[in-house]
Image (cartoon, rainbow, N blue to C red; front, side):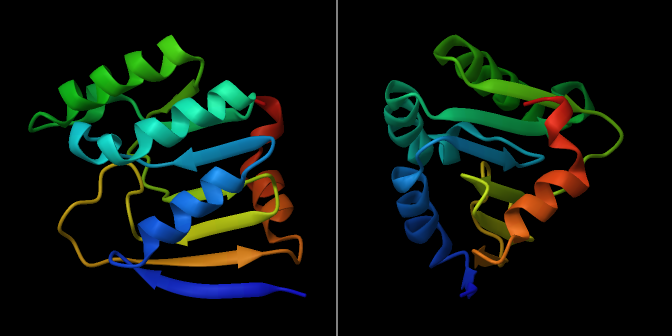
Length: 146
């Protein structure tokens, strides 16, 4: 049975963090922007997941395409990702997708920059089961990277 729910910037993070904590094998997060402030929320969970052997992939915009200090913040976090064993895939050409795939079973998609959101009003849709995660994984072509 397909499970779906909608979340805003107020309800997203607690549910998403719970999904991360429950992941068993693989987490893919596409977030064009990464900020040091938002990563304070994620680092404890990411470290636990890496310690459990969960593979984490971060797909983000190349820091050289950022302005206004986002380049420096992104570069700091990317270096930390790589230091702890999180694979980072850099995109060029105005990368703007915001999504996550957890264990190829749960999809989060919407307008919220997962690794940087702070003050903006956003939404995210959560889809579980129904093959949506595998469909999205295949549509984007992740198999050549993972």
